[in-house]
Image (tube, rainbow, N blue to C red; front, side, top):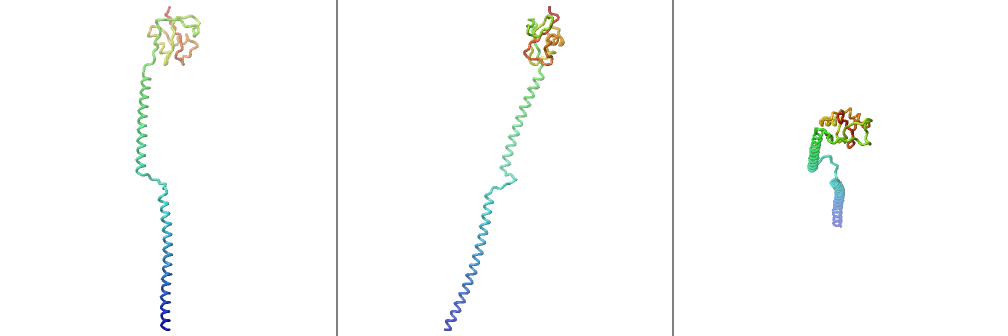
Length: 182
């Protein structure tokens, strides 16, 4: 029986040894499982970060190229606008530099003014004149002088008492007196 007890003790010792090894393996597996869970969480967080759009203050090369293209387009439009403005200014300069409208008095066909116009109290000889855009009393008097009618601005104002000499209305008729007419 001794031999059987020795075998039982040896078997028990092997069982205890195997149990210890199984316990060690179980503990190691548990530690490994915890490490795997931690790694899975970290991988999941990294995936979320990669898939989440980042607010980034820096621009990519493509962004910079697109911006440069837009700036070039804006600059081209600015240049085109500048050229258009210069052309318009040039046109205005030509209009301003052009001689003022010279009234062409109708010297050959004198006619008395109609009754509805403002005529001086005493009958006078002279001419009807229709004001044109850009006319001034000085220019009108000068044009009549060139046609041989000696008239001054003051005489035109006196002959048209209801007329505002500072505001000449195109299309309105005024009377140009001619003291030399008979």
